[in-house]
Image (cartoon, rainbow over all chains, first blue to last red; front, side, top):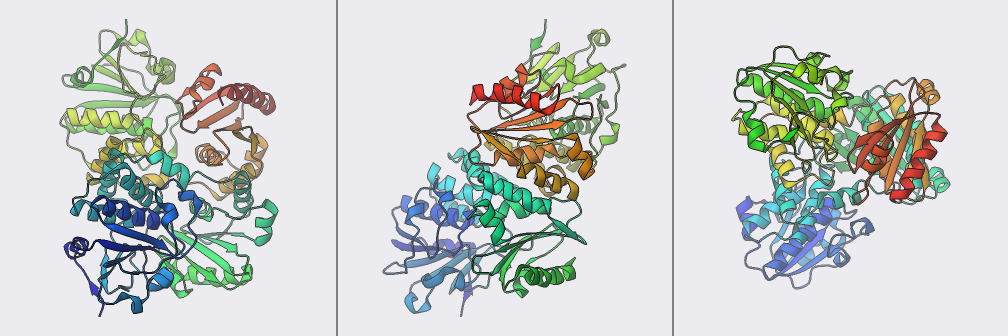
Length: 319
Length: 319
């Protein structure tokens, strides 16, 4: 029977073990990576031996975070505590989350997603937090681990990524106080912002141009699409969809934005964003995907037109 | 002989006077407006009578700030203290800055621009601050004026505008602590971000598309342009150039971005942005404009092609 823990109970789990296993989820974003690495460096600082893992490709764009290359597809071995960060369900961890491997060890999930399924034997979920890194910061403080520039940079990267640079509605006074403490400990905002938001190629900017030029408004839903042909024409492998979808939601008449990207497999990736007061997490869940109220997504069968009609039909019900 | 004041000297100027004149500069941005209105509401809270003015058109996009409609083109009359906020030189205030009208009253400029010319009889300039609103916050605190949601929203708007939403390199731990205090006092980040960064029309998004599609890289200078024909074709009066130029600087190969906009008069407005380590304020000054290291601009004679060549020639010297 899975349990939910209080903060103190969750913190206490870290005190005795010497060897700790930390897993980042698949398709790892900056919050997941920053949380996993921030926790890793903090625990090492108090003498723990930490294995930090991820069963998926990790983007080079986070190469500025120390330890990034350690994130590889490993499964638990002799560690005394297993920790799964920033994921809302077991299938986000690949082979790392395998109850057959758990034995009698404590297995803890730490997350901030409202859609978290309490999937681990032990769970600490705080859905009021805009980022998992804010929760990790609280753990670091509660364990009396002094911050250093490495820990701070990892955690600040998590916060900045998931709050879209302090722009989401769940950016709280505490978020800003934590960020302030992290900068005082040696983290820099500029570097993170440069890496997370301000880095795309000239072909990618021009692709944005093409996508924006053809954006369409359907009621108060703004949608746009990127085909495989577009990606080939512009010679692009990573389309920087995050920045694109956020720009689409900037249109004043739009309460919801949807961006459809045709994958090489022919599947259609749909990213959705909603202004405060609207909720796209339910639509994403109904389409077999997941996410938050303000940002969610799913992977659908193609072609583009049928995926688009299917999504727009669902979205029209929530606006 | 113009004087520079210490912070305490500047604060003390506000204690005695009952009637105070506050001027925002021409082409007022969110920091200027937020600083002027935040100071206005704070002083009214302690019983002062405040006239708040601006000798230029004030954008409707700040209509969410209480008092915006008060900002009109007035000159000093019987006020006992005149305050000029967020401007680096006298010519930024139109007819409001007229030494013939000053008489014996104290005339104070409060600013954060490194290029400030100490143009007023009394000057308090703190160029370490990312926004003028952070300085105004310090005045409000020093005068023991309790924050309320109105004052807080004005000042947070200033901070968010000038730090590009906590993204500039001069966003300090103190910036974030101040923002945290403002949110606790009732200001909301979401509303400001929505208004300042995330509001443009669908035609404006499509214009961005056209501009991005045609962006050009010259060494590590990325440039793009908007003609009067473009603006007419898309039916646009306000092109939201701020967002556009920031997106241009997101191109990884660009250290500097320049956006040329043809005005109705035929003049060419050039906006420039530089990554940390580069400085466009000198180029702007040589072209008769002004601004900060990372963000500056000027107004040049047309046509577009000659203005562009003139600016690119200057920029090539600094990269």
